[in-house]
Image (cartoon, rainbow, N blue to C red; front, side, top):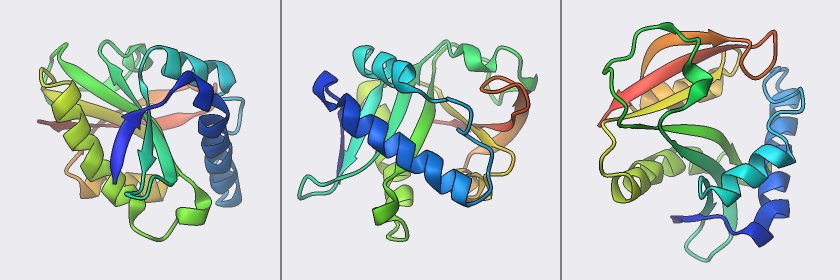
Length: 172
């Protein structure tokens, strides 16, 4: 399995995976990604700026996506809490989604492992990785904590006025 940068002509593919992720969250009763975020404009920006990555199987089937964002990430400007390390040398992982037809095969865990390698290769200056998820997204919280991230705070209303998201950091 491997990660690669998404190409502009793959905008529909990336949007399809995100829309599938939105539906998975809705089906689970989680109010994350249900209010026109992330939308096509956000995804286009991720692709144009080289932040969107596609996760493929060894036989090149698309399994999922993520966005790897270099600092500064202004989504955390209003965070209540304290970073493990005050630094400008970090990357943030956002918009992680696995196609629903591939759920239950351990791909989310493998994606996280491969993201660490990807970040190490493409962002060797990074001292930490930051990520957040909705307070009701218990599966993602479990995955994040499974890989050694520590909860460092929360952000309120960044993606939607009523959203509360927990923020995590992992030193690398």
